[in-house]
Length: 134
Image 1 (spheres, rainbow, N blue to C red):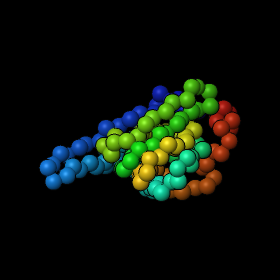
Image 2: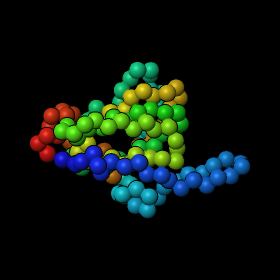
Image 3: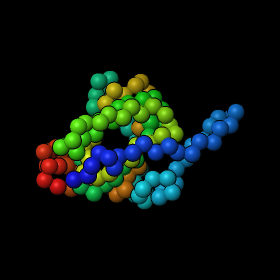
Image 4: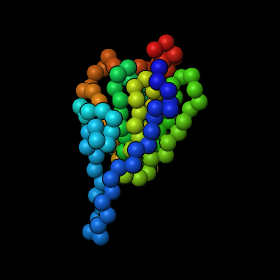
């Protein structure tokens, strides 16, 4: 089981320009894994929650590209930690074996998720109690 102490907010480079700002990230230069999959979450109806699972192997890096949302994390033994994501130049690194839920999505929010693995349905942990035994 991973510790919540491994979770971290990572500030990304920010290039300021009067024509509009630019932020980027590059694989292991800015995040602690090689990128194998990218997906985004959008058009979340008010009051809905996303996630509600952990991964055996997959690590993630999540950015609020637009709007805001909360990421609630637990490893099933420690206290729960909540991260409010609302800046496109900060991302949250989440190691494997950490339970995650995303909630409180603002209107027109856009969450970018970068993953260390390709999609594998067998990698999902759907029961938080299962984390106690990993």
